[in-house]
Each structure stands twice: as structure tokens, then as C-alpha cells.
Length: 310
Length: 310
Image 1 (spheres, rainbow over the protein chains, first blue to last red):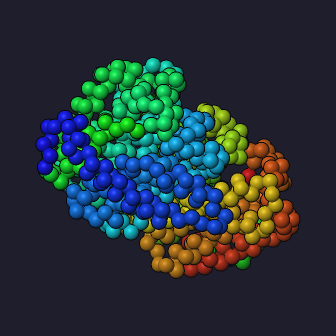
Image 2: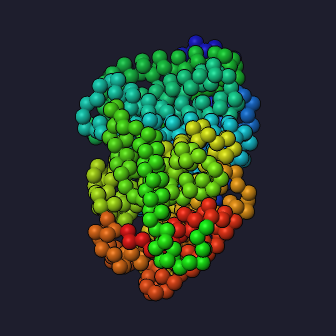
Image 3: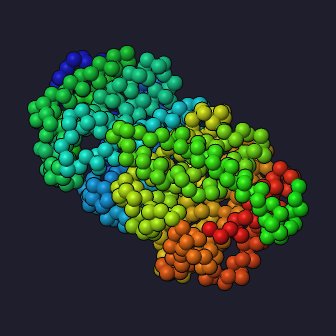
């Protein structure tokens, strides 16, 4: 087990290569799983499937999916089984990006260095592809192919709906839209991000515990870990938006500031934001104590989310 | 039991008052259930909840919900239990209308005689309210408050996802958008409506059988009944769009023709469309044979969908 008190940078200097390899390996499995779950068609729905695949495949580190597969591994759940849950989470994430990018929302033309879905296709197709991706995510969690009991699948679905609906991701996006152009206080910014991006990241970490039918304590530990790295992730995102170039990000840089969004950097300053992210990372690592050395990659990941460049 | 070979009009002359009362009673219970499941809030998500409630509450005959509650009654499922499933179906239907009405889709300013959701609020809110309504529908089906076993709930969710996703309702809407402005052959129009409106109506009729853990034969009978009245419903809609006034419809009349959509009336003529709807109604009534007199209201409903004025 790697010393859990190491600084994030030292930790990544030691274990960064292992983590990157693990993320890359898992992303490959998740990508293949999504590809299998969204087969292209030649019928009347060909264009819809093409847009769903465009929005979901071919990109990203799959951090949410990585969390689901890796936390499931703590409970000896086979990767192929957890990869289906990871695929569902990634599809839900993809649907939220497709809708967020729409002209009536954040109006983004680029995503992962490519035209966003409504630019590649058209707005109607993007709306419908997002809708169908959400449906597909629930369908996958309900399917017996997860090899989980009906009770476990219901648990997966209930927590998923809570994390992604009006009291979770979509609710956060609504607060974000409402708050655009006016200064939000720090607590409101925290709350908005806890909903908008935090809930789904927390769910991804919790999903392994649900699949593994973990004790309430271990499940709560992974929820807490997920909540904390979710918050750290968002702060790191705000820092990146200020410091990175568009090329590094694969999307427009400096956009938050230009659109008058309240960011952690604006509220805490760069140094204050970095300190808060580092504190969250430490606490997230502490959450993993009961799992011992098996959770080393998850500890590395907590460091990685605040040190990444894109 | 009312003679199943009666003509639709004769049947409604005899039983219409009973059916209308039953629809009205059930709609009241379903409305109350939705109201309870979507409580207004005062927090940051107040606007989102308000839009979700606006899109879902206060209107309509709740025919999909009526089907779910009434078919469940054939298997002695308590109304309160089935009403939750009905509420989920109505929320899914409402989300599809909210997204269909968007400028990038059908661009409709009116719905049920009121401003459509994006006109009452704004586009971003309408997109998010639709998204969250879909999530909520799945959440309700997963909840233990349906008093169904986890296996039954998984069955409800799987069939629901199939009916509403890329291979169902959303797939149909995509074909509809693609086909706008060009003449589609009859078989393609049938297929598009079987997906766009048919799948959810079929699911509504099937939901009672799922809740009631019906035999495969009885479940198939209700699926078939639902498929047929769904098709008849759409043909009747096309006829109404040609013959009724905007005041009767509560939405713009003659819109299909103006937008160049291929309709059953355009393809079959008014008389041909009426004959096909009547044939489907007869077949739907025949599907109900094993249920005897208990299914009389469902027989009346099959007649009602082709004789309604709005």
C-alpha cells in the first residue's frame, strides 16, 4: 500500500504511470461495452443511433465509468459486469453534455475537440439522441445481463435516478442556468456543483458498493469519497478553465469568466481554490482507509483529478 | 357484459356516460398521484419543479394512465398502486410533448389550450424539465411504494425503457422529423406512428398485466389490444386534425397538412382512414374476449378513441 499521507504530486510521481495505464485499460473495456450496447442500425432510426454513438463513443478518460468498475473491483465484482453499469453512467453523462451544449443552454460548438452533437447533426437530432441515451442508461441497469439480482438492480436504478434527476444533475444544471450572469455566493456555487457534476460522480463511486452489496458503512465511505473527488474535480475544472489553453482542453477556454459564471477561482482566488481541492483530496483518501492497499488506484485517482491538465 | 359486436357508436350511446365518468374518476386519482409525486419546492430547483408540474398537471383525459389503472384492475391490483405506474407513464408522455413542442422540433406554441412549456418558461427550462420528468418516471417505477416485488418492478422498467427509447417513442419522433416535408409511403407512416405514439399506449395497456403477473397469453392479449387502439388513436388524430377546429383541439388545427407531414388521411382518404380505425377497434375488442364483462370499459374505450372530438 502506498503511504496515504503522501502529497498528491509525490503520489502521482510514484504511481502516475500505473494509474494512467489502469485508466486507459478500463476505458478500453468501457468503450467496447458501449459500442456493443449501442449497435449501429440501417433502419429508420439509423440517424438517431449514429448521433447517440457520436455523442458517447470515441473520447474521454471515462472517469465516471472508471470509478464504477474500480469500486466494484473492491468487492470482487467481475469487470465485465461492472462495465455495463459504467456504460450506463457514461451514457447518462453523454446525454447531459449533448443537452448542455444546445444553443438554448450553454451554446457550445465544440466538445472533446470535435463539433458538439447539434453542430455535427442538428438540434432536433441532438435533443432526441440525448433523450434516448437517458432511456438506454436505465434500460441497461434494468437488464439481467448485469448478472445482479433484481433487488440490486432496483437499488442501482433508484440511486441513479436520484443522482441524475431534478434533485441531482438536472437540478444543478437548472440552478447553473438561472445563476448565469449574476454573482452567486460561495455556498450556492458549492451546492450547484454538488448537484450538477457531483451527484453523478458520487453515484459512480457508490455503484461498486451497490453491485457488491457492501455494508452500509463501506457504501457510505465510497459515497463520501465520490462526493469529495466530485467537488475537487469541479474546482480543478475551474482552475483549468482559467489557466489552460483551448488546445489542452479540447473546448473553448476562459468561457466561464466570459459568460459571467460564478467560479471557485473567482470566489476563492487560484491559491484558495487549489487549497480547497487539496483538502478534499486528503479527505477522500482518508475515506478509503478500510479498503487498504486494494484502493491504491482510487487514492491515486483522487490526486489525479486535481493535477490533470485536461 | 355488453355485446362485443355492437358498432362503436351504438356502444358509446349505451355506455358512453359510464365510460366518461370512469375516465374522469381515474384521471382525478392520477392527477392527485402526480401532484404528490412532484411536490413544489422553494429551493434552488423551484423553477424546474414548477415547469415539471406545469407540463404534467392540469389537463388531459390521462388515457395512457387510464389504460394502466384499468388493465391492472383486471388482475385486482389496487388503484392506488396502479396509479403510481399511471403517473410514471403520464410523466413520460408529458416529457415527450415538452420536447416535441420545442422550436427545433415541432415548434408548437400551444398545448392543451395553454402556452407550451418553453413559451411559458423558456427553452432551457423546457429541455431540463423534460429531462427530469423522464428520470422521475423511472424513479417512480423503481420505488418500493408500487408495492410490487423487485422482479415485477424490473419488468415494468425494462418494458418501459423499450417502449420509450430509440426503438420506441423517441425513435418514432426521429423518423417523424426526418420525414417532414416529403411524402412517406403508407407502411412507413404506420411504422412511425407505431413507434411514436403506439409503443407507449401499448405499454400502458401491458402495464396492468405486468403488475398482475399475468400469464403470457393474457399479457400478449393486452399488448395486442394496446397496439391496436394506439394505431386507431393515431388515425383518429389525423382525422381530427383535418376536420376539427383549433378550439375543439386546444392546439393549432390543420398543422400536419401545412407542415407537409404524411398523414393517414392524405394516404387513405377520410373514408379509408375511418374504415381502418373501425377495423382496428373491432380487433382490439376481440383481443379482450378472455376477460369477459370485466373488460367492458376497455371495450368502450376502444370505441371512444375513434369517436372522440378532441
